[in-house]
Amino acid sequence: MTWVAAVLVSTTLFALVSILDKRLVADLFPSAQSFNVAFGLLQAPIAAVLFAVVVPTVGFDGGAGIPWAIASGLLWAGGIILFFHGLRLEEVSRATPIQMTAPIFTALLAVTFLGESLNALQWVAIGMVVLGGATVTVRPELGRLRIANRRALVILLGASLVMGVAFVVSKEATNHMNVLAIQAFRAAAMGVGVLVLQGRGRAFREVRGMLRERAAMGTLVLTEGILAPIAAFMFVLALSMGPVSLVSAVSSSRPLIVLAASAALSTRSWNVLGEPLDRGTLGIKLASTVLIVGGVAVLALA
Image 1 (cartoon, rainbow, N blue to C red):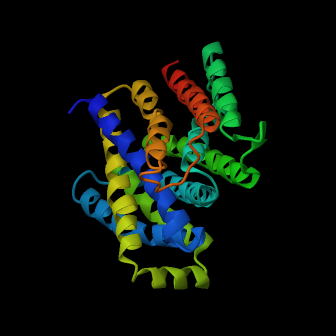
Image 2: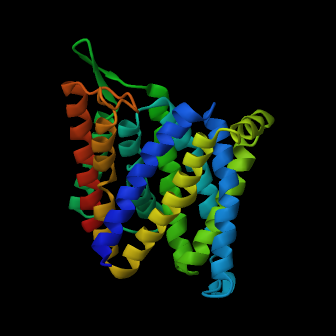
Image 3: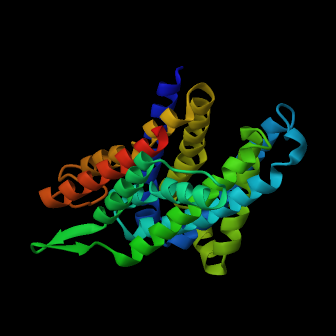
């Protein structure tokens, strides 16, 4: 398998995960909090499998990267919690492009704290992503343009910021420890972090009640227990075979796949997501998504 095939499989799977997560958090689970708790509990078997592979094979490279991997997992916990709350409030074809602005926060943090520099083309790319992120929040109503959901926008931007910090910390972890070991500690820390932040009595009771809902639990296991880990593995595999700039650029096409899929799943014949399909709304979403995808791709390649 080539790196192009690996990253395309990863990107497509992540797009499918985003759509299924929207279905789970908005329709199948009683609250975003209970979904987060179920997600956190699911990280335990995932981490156990990873540790079972890591311990007898690649090891921990001296363990210097363990604190960074744990910090990465805790940050991802915060970002995931915010994203799922925002996803419950907003359409997936709007939420996903906003989530993809995380690399911009990463770039700005790298410039501020790691001494990296950006060239003129990269600053233009940042401007494209910012413009696209602002445009995707707009919804045409009665001939006027209005902010679609201010609360969701704030939550999703907060998620992108936290994930941007997580990317920087994850990068530092890779300087000290192999990727597979990092994934093991990250999954464990992410699960613990989610449960500490969201694990309240009501949420646990809701999850316990959901155990009888085979459709919801089956979709959760399929999405976050199988598809998401496979997508993450394929992304790492692509990174191991191809240049990181090109892999990142191709993976940034995820919002376009989500937009196309969400439109297909909102038609009269198959209205699963119920997103608006009028020409004005689709035009705004497409324009903003292209800006974000193009900006992230240029930032990676430049």
